[in-house]
Length: 494
Image (cartoon, rainbow, N blue to C red; front, side):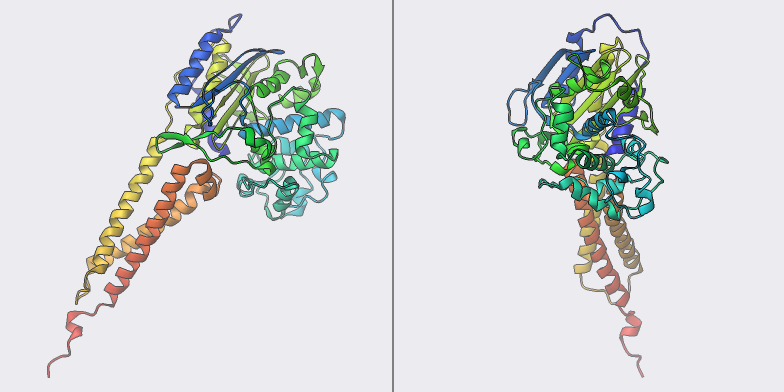
């Protein structure tokens, strides 16, 4: 899930040409026309946005309806997805500001119970490594433990405790690997240091100081959040409503675009909100410091750092998605402008097109001209899998027909060849799609079914047909090989 969003964002950023400098005041009407145009093109039922300049929300708006059919507003809560990660990072920087946590201290000083499959590696992981996603814990190990719908108290500690069986794939600080495990360890650290639940910690350190009044941090509060929407075989339908309290640190935090606008003000106003220093300028500088190279630029402490090519300015941003929702916060701190956009529909295959709405809005705010975004590439993968299903179904029908016919008295070597080919093709399709496709996304099949159900259902169909073809073709092959030659079937005359 993570690397697809990186690639999509790279495509969006690189497609925007360099143009004239920012005007004195953005044309909000034009920005809103652009956003509503993107909303219609992507068939998104509802969209909300906020435009920030320095210390204030200049403009906000919403269009369409939520999953309950009610009009969208800038206060409609939606899932943050991976924008939860920079929220977690920003809250941790509050602890850094007060000296209760230091960026280059090993986390085992406060979390002596932290274990990985290689104990020496766990002892080398620092707070900075977690913030910059260089702990050595792979995306695969992180996603394998994610999206567990654990809504009971103590879920964060249980999640991190499960990392005891995770094998690091790099030494800490050596390699950027985007994994939800990093945010989870940071959340466990916050709970250990403060003695608060992670939800209470976020409220004390960020939500209250920033007046983020619409945030949702547990399954009970999530009952007031309308369901989102998912793309399914070319249509948009209401998505199943899910919430994972244990996953709030990396992806299940929710709130409104107004909340996100208040968070963005920290980056455009030197860490201050309504005249109060929520973060020191030193902490803001740390958050804006480019870290390891990542798709689209660099990864700083919890935020992506890059350049908006259309206007040649530095951006600090993050995108995220969870079942039914897409969120983007993008700031240009050197220019004092920021945009937050939330949309209540999402799929892997539409990620770049959904990201383009936010990038284009900020481009317009800074005086640039965004290119028309590339249409979603959802049709081709679905057609390709559909073609595989058709081929397997035809092969299964032909093979079953041959198997049900009476056996010939003589071996048919074309039948042997066809049955062997069918058995291999079925097995390769079942194993290839059952194993390769989830690994291509660094996910399990359960994640594909959760986040891209049409792709998941096609995959299950291919696995089922592939195994059925393998079994039928193998039975036909065995019967054919056991058939005696007609010359051997009768005894020789005396």
